[in-house]
Image (cartoon, rainbow, N blue to C red; front, side, top):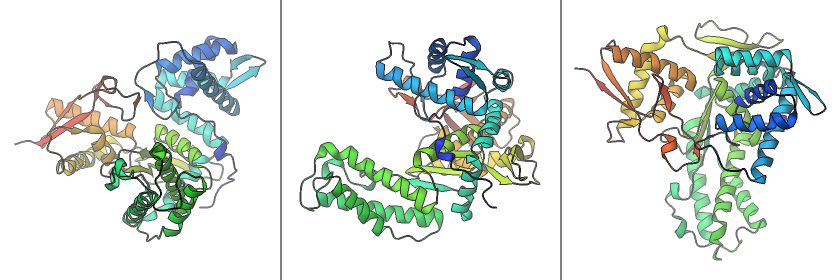
Length: 425
């Protein structure tokens, strides 16, 4: 399949992750037309939805007075959302006043009557008609790793992950030692997950030259390095190899930030999955939960958007009645596979979720629906072979963390984050 009318608009996407920002802005305009008042309402809703500036929700909403820097950041996001809404024709702008267009009002109704998933799927239509980024990225995923259903890996290994404690790094030679261990591990991962042999020596030498040229590290192997630069140096390693994997191995034509924005938006819609917490893998994985085809024969795929040339985005939404047994098998297999290296009876539900989603190529939203259906049968005694227990360990708000990086799964209208499975007698 050739690129269809692909422009260079992909990297020009506005810089915010959460698709709820569209609803927050539209809802604020519904309540006022003055831009200054809309911004105040926007801030309130942003706190209510616990939206962070990154791709993670905030655990605690700031109640104290915002700093000038925070206000500037919020206003930047506010203007970015306005610009994208303008691109889609969702709002009209006159001087310092904003008004909802007919499509904007329809989007509010979809959110309030049908929920967030339907809202996000409608936004897909606007995003693809304007950018066609998902068509490009989903195609790229499959082409980059045909042997493994479009799986992309982005390994991240700190020195400690490779057995090197921070205090052991004293000289340039120690940095070089870390780089060599890192390259060896990256080459192993490429071979394991992508079935490719790859020599990264030239790239590693270039990275070291970059560190020398920026004076973060001395070219003299025996010279001491400044420990205060540790985080900057390790970040250089991480960013360098992430960009290398994306642009050189996977042939993505645009920037890493644009890729991350589109992938996370795709995750919210349910057409791409991405996680930094896949069990026994250090780093991030990305894979499609959809296909770009003219037609599909399976009833487990649903068309979300059709292009002018006849191709369409088909999201994988397997029907529960036909796939519940397969889901239960994957759930049980994932639980007992992880239990081999964990003595606890209750295991992390998010880890189980990641494995099941990957094995079935389903979104987190679909996983939640399947688990709710299976758990109801579990409570009523309809599951004959297994018994499932779902509980809550510490919720994110009970920790000292600032952001929710692994959100609980909502089952039976309650947040759950640990699971136990046993076979019935």
